[in-house]
Image (cartoon, rainbow, N blue to C red; front, side):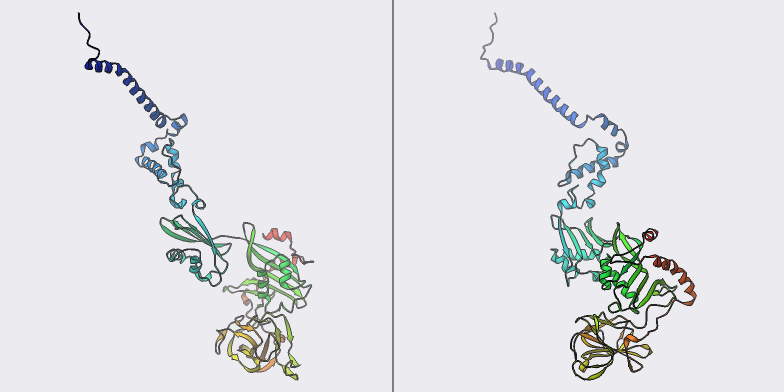
Length: 495
């Protein structure tokens, strides 16, 4: 009879345990393999019906280069510091389609993927201050010399830095590392400059916006000054200066305007997105009052000369301006008077024009400087010689322009100096004297001939050109109050 091995036999015990453990290990390993396989295949291979349809086109599968782009797109998603990581996305076709717009780093201005400039850049606003150069304004905003030089280099062939003006604004966008990502500089509503960080370089460009121009009829009745009347009618002060320049040879708007005088205009207005930006040209103008009726029409001759002419084709531009400055009133007229300081009667060979100290005095006509300096009771004095035997004198000046020296030539409306009270004077004013062929004359009583009229061969062409403007001008109703009056039909016709 066989006896069983002792139960404490070590060999038998290990064999016995090994035989009993084998089914458990197989089950456990099988379970783990099955679970991992299920998770792997359900996460990477199982597609919905919609995804299978999107994968139907074989363009990506058949093109190795396209497959490479798709892989690169996923890699770029992982490389973004804060980008949208999409490695587990199953829609590879959709990933490829959005790749260029979504991960173009130049457009995103950052290595951070889809974040906008405002979300990750520091914005610094600045402006041009008085006496600033372009570079000093940038340095004051926090840029170092290298960054400032880079910006100037990017704009040097786009922007004339001599044209910058006090108050103009700019914006800087700096990355977290302090690098310039974008710079904008606005000179006007129509012109701005942009610098962007593209492929490691700063690239600048000039941006010009196009405006819509329409011709608008305007009617204003003077009740105070020209400036006040036009401003209360809703017009810009720029229109006042344009009107003054047109009639400067016939009307002195500081002494010739009176309450009740009327103005009618056909003027171009430039608009951007429906909002007024600036005036264009005054095509036709009429001033009616105690000084008479004066009309002006803009015309360009065949040789390219622009100018304003009356209905007969005579130029409004005269050899002499009506007045050499913007004065407030005539403090002393031409002729014999009792001298306010000397106390006896004396010939006053000129006109005294009262004006604040510092008011610019300009040349009434082209001429040659024959004297510039200090001269006795005249104080600071400038004397000009003009054509046709005329000579003008400007006394009691506060300052004389540096360019006004003996022997220099001046142009009409060039600034000679400023109003003062030097020499024998009781207060700030300009003594304006004039001689013709060596004899003193009243400068305000002279009738000066106009410059060249419309050339004879073009006269009929000129009259045909201004006829529509003349008709429109006459149809504008005269304003009856302080508001601008206009004809809606004309607005629609010309707008």
